[in-house]
Length: 375
Image 1: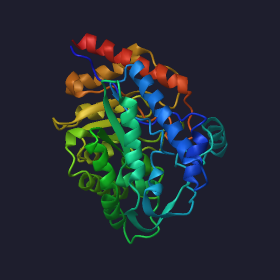
Image 2: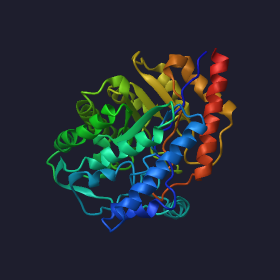
Image 3: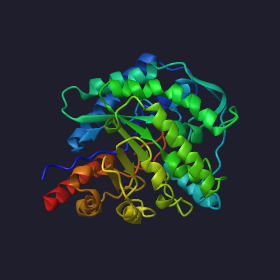
Image 4: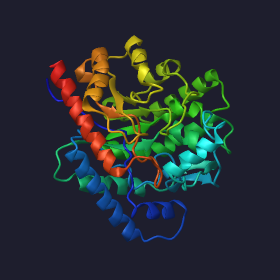
């Protein structure tokens, strides 16, 4: 049979020369704009080259021009301010000593944690155009499909808590208008647009940990409705979405079960769904996908390699995991992917950059084994 496509969730480790520049920009400190553009441009070019060399079919810019996948929007939108400390995730809250160990391994989260303190509006789309320009330059000479990430409206509400709007829905409504131009710019550039949506799972035990499961479902459903409105002008087949329970090594025993949110996930417009399939707390949930009446236009992109461990998965294990999903929807409706990003925030993450490329190479080899067996 034909080759099974491989991809990943988007973010890649930032180099040591890039992290200080990203953090300075995030903190509103002085930095050399020409140096920033030069360093980011070179980093994206190198990342694209390495993805292609590892056999990745659908590559990204690694989000290397952003301080983080969920907080970068504060330099593009008005209405955000302050630096609000976040509560520990529910599973980590009773484990203070483990949290210290985890911080020592993962690094410090030095990015600004702003809150929504005023009306949200788009004020600067130029950084999005800069991302697009750099990515297009990096892709020159490569024949490959490509995607770019953007924060979903719901993700923004989970990371930038509401201190201004009278309701969650009112906050979302302004985010729809504010984020739509970025979404449409990425699509107009010819890339697939990936909406990052941990707000549909992870946020149950982080940003919305004080809600009940039913209250969380109401919040998640509103988030999907906002995502659908913001992407209404983009074809569903050009859209991807990523759902996860948090890219950190921890108990994860407070994670909401997939079966409690899968109907909400499937109500979202994107045709391709990326989700965790290697995380040991959720690998068993392939059965949930098998037992669910999936729309025929949905493509499953399960995570087949873990992004919280420097183990390089054996290609045979990857093939076995992939074959479960091939058995559910067929080989033409699966894409081999990763559980989460390899570098979700600048200067923060456990995966060694060199291991990233080894894992992506193993993903390609595992997908080839599965394709051969299914042929």
